[in-house]
Image (cartoon, rainbow, N blue to C red):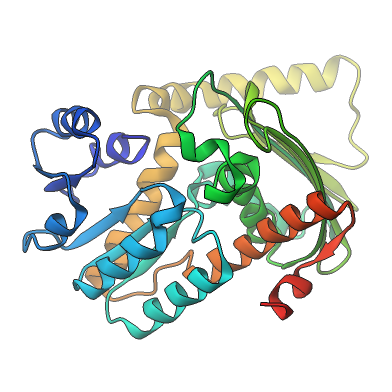
Length: 337
């Protein structure tokens, strides 16, 4: 069920009319939550359902290409959860199919649509921080058990395909520049790639650092440092956004008073958001509203499959770097494809 059904439950303009899952228990649970839509254990039966206009593909990553291509062939609009695919061959097939189709296609990088990411991007665009120099992010989680496919890199498991791909896309989205080179170190435990540290070079001389883990505490945080200031925020805390001038004092009573007043000012609206699922669920609602509007208005759907291919290139470069123990340029991955 993830976060998509809870997000869609609050959107009057979108109705969940059908669900498909090979697991009958999970299917029954999701159907009960969604209010009793039609259910299928074979996704192809769902694609034959004339009442379905758009399909969200949230299957394990090894099946993204197969199911997504079938959605477009069936004449449905396609929302595909990240990552785009596991290989560049499949990614290119999807990019070509989306470009050739008259139906809308969109990739699910929900962090782009988070309220604080939108705010951070505006601050960076306005030049408030000066030229960006460093991006530092963390995305960690805690799981006692995970599905078998998520235990192995080859089937799309591990922190690179499941977690780091979100931040690889986010880095480029925030500063509007591509990743050029990646150096990665990974550690495996009971599963492959449980922990990873990544350093990336972004066009324009920007350095990005990311820490990713699947078996530790839960964090999802961003810092951006420019020549004239910095900003930071957490995807899990509504009052976490900070934007600080480089010469601003960091100690003494005044910064603490300002911090308290700012938090009190944001509290009423923040608590209202929490009652409606919080900013994280709202990020899924925002991407779904955008997808709906693109379908209804014929406008472009942002977060394209080309964006997904670029993020996949970064993942594949990180995997190669961790394997070989050296930095890897993204062009090296693309040129050898």
